[in-house]
Image (cartoon, rainbow, N blue to C red; front, side, top):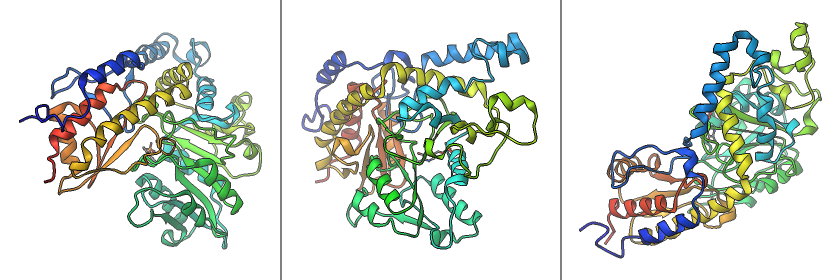
Length: 431
Ligand SMILES: *Cc1c(COP(=O)(O)O)cnc(C)c1O
């Protein structure tokens, strides 16, 4: 018997999913969706946009145009290209600022995420004998964990002493704001948390934790890898000191795409240490070839090198798309899609070794739902089955978490229905 036959194990109806999509189609037609190599449908049901977003169709055309400027102009492209290379990064600044709720002067697209975290910690992690600890989540993404531990070591500190890892309460999967706040004592120099936790999908209370960190005398930075392009952000109004995010997850800018960085304007033009290069100086002074820089009063002062134009091109295309549609509109569709998937999962998880660990309150999560699998199942094996037998692309965090992220730009209710149906069929009911 297939899942289809057993009635009660098939969540929702396909007709209902298709009707919901007809009324609420999103912008799927703007994206290339990979073909399926398994299952009953020509395209995959793609739920890994929190890991690598799909390619907007416009990316190819725009990138080829930028690439051809090199062919036809050579070095003159710095000034003569349709989008001149020298100030190219400035095209990304305003839309990136709107996306994260910052002033344009507070925002810059550069480097990759972990590199930006390091460059920002050069300025914002300045330990003293009394105040030297960095607070992160115990379930921080490993790159963040390695980054802060290596920063502690760089300052001659013992990372096991300097790094405070926040754990959920026994029997819970997510952090409570009050428990985070309780840890913020006079020894904390820096709070550096994920805005949306990559594993659980929990959206942290960024304004409350930022305020509590400041009240404790700490600097507060946020890793927005899973938040940028997923949830609305108001970094300036929330008084966040600094932040960084990558652009290849919800921002669909391609593997290893350039990252973003934000520095609150109160930190501009001061005497914070920064690591500099020729892109740290005022553009007007760049070719004076002077021995000392004259950094601008903006986040651009944190730039080091001249940026890769062909890597910025896809970020430009993506940010233009977010700008045109608006993150608040996307968030509304995102909440509808995620609630729909949650409802379908609620029909199959009680009788199976599957447990959604993402907060059920819509305000405490973004698009992603994380499912803990039990009963001896391994997340990686389950994801392979979903992929090769059902054409559903989910993502496994070993040993036991499967993450599903319906992305409001291109995911469909029908994709959610396919995912729930595949899970119902792939995971036997417990007797
Ligand atoms: C994806 C992700 C990274 C990746 O770091 P890169 O420097 O872009 O390779 C880092 N931190 C978090 C929290 C992430 O989700």
